[in-house]
Image 1: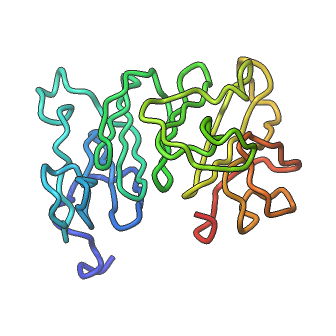
Image 2 (image 1 turned 90 degrees about the vertical axis):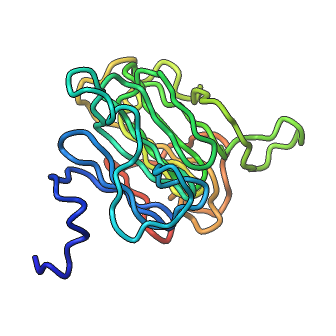
Image 3 (image 1 turned 60 degrees about the horizontal axis):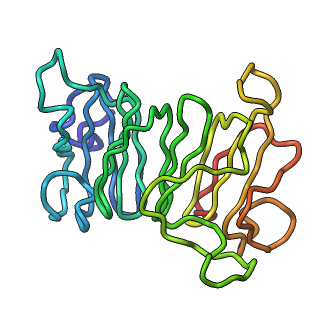
Length: 228
């Protein structure tokens, strides 16, 4: 690769994963640290200030400042519009930016979309927080709305089943689910819910859903750019 196309000499370690938010980027290195660059508003870069970063800067995470023997290793990243997430090898989830928090949830996967966050735990339970697609308890109506949840809540629709993979856009979620409480590599079912103004749920209409609804004949998921 031409030197002019390289991101920065600041990021000389081996990169194993990247994530892009609304106006910022994250990179995960093989030694378990996270670098960020782009817009810094709301502290989404995790560098201790809200200034923009034109080159990669290491995220000021406690897991990377401890001794090599004791520090946690970050193994996953996700970027939302105004926030960022990292998954540590002990299952804890680290969030910074808009509404920062640390979750000790035994997670094995994290995703972020718009202003929502999701995590799958080791038992296959899907947790969601932030601006979540659900029915507003105050409206008493069955219509779609985004309701703020400041703590993770389980998606009870999948109780008794195993969520294997999840992806999300700004206001919708898609999940691959295995029937039963354990995943044995069998065929998966694909569900979607949330905002459907542009047909992004793939259900053949534009009606938004507050509960997961089954999509048939799909075995992999990845919401596209237009459907964020």
